[in-house]
Length: 340
Ligand code: FE
Image 1 (cartoon, rainbow, N blue to C red):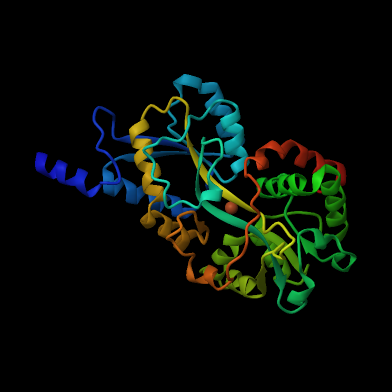
Image 2: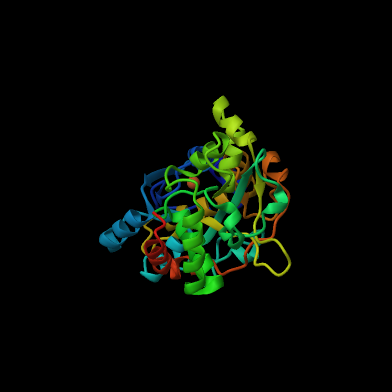
């Protein structure tokens, strides 16, 4: 039995074998995807460490971490927005990334310059357009959606959504507050309808002819194209993917990460490090790309076949902490320009 234990430790050479801690790790996570359950089950099978999950929106989880303070049972905070990780870090709720976490294979530009969080996956906030009613040459940048030719044709969800707040924060960081206000005002004027629904609903609205161009997260197109529901596949097939801001003088397409940080007082620190190393491994990163159609942060892992077909793109190299720094300004821009 002892030999078996040692043998397991050798197999798990990614990790060191821990002693004296219960075999659990506690997550506070904002992620709402089926693939996460697969990851945690695989990790449990591999290590015997049980993953306990508390799911909620990022602000609620941050508030809970703050209230629980040193009594918190949480070991890891996971968000779908670098801005929320920046917020948690700036409130002193996270500790620095451990040296025991393997980051050699992680895309360098996705790492936190302040070393409080690690990227888990990344996603692009792309444009999708109607195959019937839009020529690809008509598209260029986020900024060019302000053109009058898009009047009554643009679809996007509400400004209360974190993905849009992060996008607007990136526009402020790149074009300034006044520039962002002008852009937002024009987008509102060009909307095909008052913002409603989620990203998938915007694609469905193109399919049903309500509008022609939508701003959505890239993985939702993969999810639609691989859906069991015929209507969803049809909606996915009615549109094509466009990566905005790709010209040489442009900044690249806005991306955001899903990311994770270790909480300040993580009671199961060693297990948290093991889980983080597992989630960054090639095996787990492949599980993400194949099930959720996100992009891997591990240089060795290619996107899923569906996503590969869209081709490569240049990402906006903005320090992702800015998505948190400019978040309040972004909300103000939305409010003052009538983006509901
Ligand atoms: Fe999502």
